[in-house]
Image 1 (cartoon, rainbow, N blue to C red):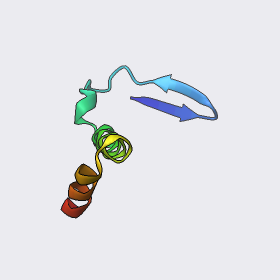
Image 2 (image 1 turned 60 degrees about the vertical axis):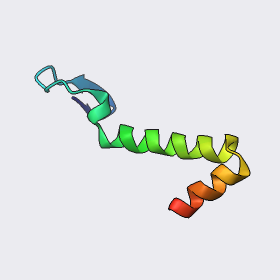
Image 3 (image 1 turned 45 degrees about the vertical axis):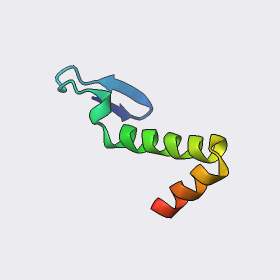
Length: 54
């Protein structure tokens, strides 16, 4: 939806609109945040169960 050439960003107004939730990058980031949250806030048993599922 944008192009960057020589440091200048240009918006492509013809690009189709999509929901951000459809983005693979967004889905991967969401999964990473969930995993980090588990490792930071989970109980020892939750962490163990989580790691055993991988």
